[in-house]
Image (tube, rainbow, N blue to C red):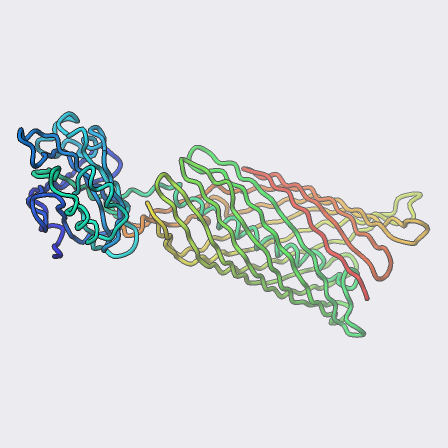
Length: 511
């Protein structure tokens, strides 16, 4: 027999103010309201009204079949979802039962009012059918009847006999519905932080595309006698952002590889397309009890153009798009959440490079100076999603995070002829500065709320690198012969609220 949950409640009281973080509705009911009988095994079948955390407890019981009728019953609670047992409890403890009641149950004025063998079930309902059954059994018979379906458990306890059957037991339940849970900002922060990392992946790929754009003939594979050339390079960047009193620290690892196909149009113009792939991962987020890790695979698509304005100045520009597939894990107290969502990315950059050569006395080859200036924009357009799992789950709204970088720097390199001209070494040093004008100006906020809540979404911001970033980069090109060329580089950057290091390279081998 199925009954609405409110039909089994004998007396109810809505608690308006409870001195704990969560608001709970507390209901009391008696064994006489069971859908079976007044002697254990007794059971109540009902629909839980919402996902959330529920507790069921006994606080007074009387043994049946004793001559003195003393209050020495030993109850055992079982909870079923559908016909499957999801939880049971033998001894919940007087203090735990009383603390749960918050003094709102008549006759339960202190922990001493509860039976020393009271039972308590704390249950998180996050998925599956809403139909549940609470079964009151008894010690020791319930112990031998566990891990069975509902009907089998009832029959098993009945077959054990009634010498210790429970009568006149008082029960109560609390309802901490998901919508009444207060959102903690740190639950959403990992997803806000992941936006920063996604933007970093877009920036990393953009740097790879433009690094040797226009110079493919020197560093890549020329395709036969055509005007086409192919160039590849890769870069791995590891970063760490320092948190503060309200926002957590986290690390990131971003890897990108890029393939450029470039065409020489004429003496002034070159154009190309590029495909990039890689990963962008967040790790070691641990703040106020919330831990999280997120991983992604990503693909980047770009077109670019290079114009040699004159012998001393070159202009480069590109536009591109990206696709990210994210998967994450978040844990907090009793919460174990997973997530999966997608993001689109967009970017554009234009920069100019001066090529200045300086001859120094007694040097066979000049030193080349390359001042640069540029501006770059990126957008990380994330889909909305809801976490899966158990505990306090959250729903994150669709959002677009943006970056606008003002870039400048200077590079220095020099050709060094080795072993009488057998091969060529080109060491380089570059100092660069970037200003992220969108950092900290609500361009990286994200909105989230507890899943199922009617509350408005809360805007949350994670810690970023801040506006200012300076770096030093060292590298070298190795020209072994006309067919084999490779380059290596390493970079260290210091930002307002963190630091990062990276390494990368590319090669050409002409068959």
